[in-house]
Image (cartoon, rainbow over all chains, first blue to last red; front, side):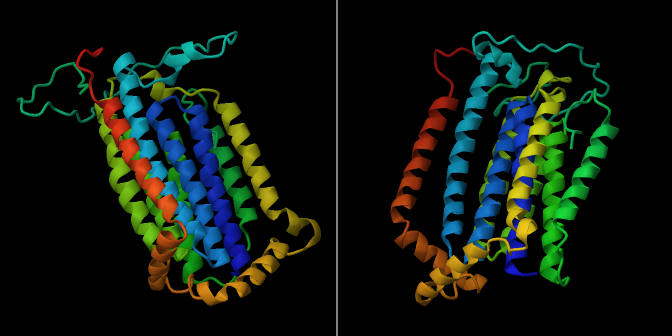
Length: 143
Length: 226
């Protein structure tokens, strides 16, 4: 495999990752998953950078990837803090609950059919309050 | 690839689209030369990355989605290693798979709700999103392959000529940078702290600011609303 072919293949993989992230970001409604999709788009871009760095034989691509990593870490921290704030105020992660802030004149998007009832109750691990004995109540913990 | 999230949609349709997409990309990726270890590893890693990326978009449970994102990150790190970037691989594993994933799962556990929720099992405009994604992907692929398929010129030919000229110019300084992975790290450090010193400082400041901002945002107000 010549180096151009190699570069091409890496670029294709980067493009696929980016576009998967874009599709997910556009169509999921869970805030956290939208966030993860944005991070996956960053991964695709990063892959492109590294492939170009290898192809050109210098290190600028890797340096920029390091900066992308830094910014991604900051962004993840800030974004998760914002997600927590949003969850505290609405008790849901659904972005469609925030469609009050849409453009004026846009009709609201409504869900037509109801969800099927829960077939199997999914049990997530919960975070117990530290220092207290664990008791299982209905109340979900919100810090 | 339509399979993403709409549970009401028949999933065989999504499977069909997935097969089609796989076939298309396979025809695009066809240029396999001699099969060596690097090629095999490249295909394995990229297949894992793309598959778990699809899982991330598709899966309903956010915890599984976060774990498949971890798989994406790990296989991307494998690709980094193939591209002679061992320091980046280590840093990405530590930062992403170590810190960010753990934070994500922490927040998922913190902000969970019982039962099926609107946020997890519905999607907004899956058709339009997938369609625009496909269009962009096709545009990218055509743009990547364009010059070659038009007039049999090697892609990036002009670019390569330019690059070879450049690399002749500075071959004295950066000659064996990308060759040895072990020496690569030293060169990366030298480049980082000489040419990009200002950017490194700005990055550090950004991290500090983000830390303070995160603490401010996430901490509970004393008079706060819940």
